[in-house]
Image 1 (cartoon, rainbow, N blue to C red):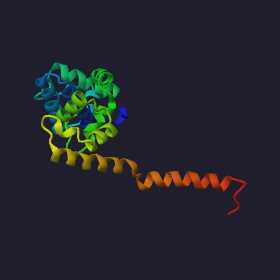
Image 2 (cartoon, one colour):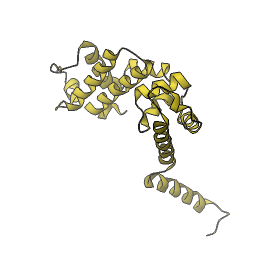
Image 3 (spheres, rainbow, N blue to C red):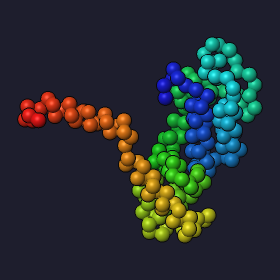
Image 4 (cartoon, helix red, strand yellow):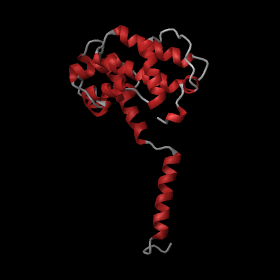
Length: 186
């Protein structure tokens, strides 16, 4: 995250990621809710928080932002992240957090998949869904498993696609290499 261009949305994203990981870990629901509410408050605040803090002014009292969260807001504005998020990333593998990008999976379902089936990656989830193991988890069923399988396959297809800009950049590098090659005349 570019510290020069941190926005309210960036701070809120850090809070939401903390909440997601805490929920995957099974942390106190009130703590998870505090981070989610804090993120929502920051997203909806009408003024640029980093600008206020960098100018030396204090933030006005914001609902749901107590001393602890306010300290993290300051830390995120100064460093682009916070120590709590770093610690949580050490406790919960990033691949597990990446499962949240799959449609139909929230932190509670990711937690069940991780703790009950040991699923840590998208590929493991795909294999478990194809093998019919997911349907046996509490809160899942055969229909949910099929929807999840389709969502995982769609996620993997999207991950394999490149944007036109990225493809063009790669093609230009290849063309440049070929132009410089003495073995190629045309």
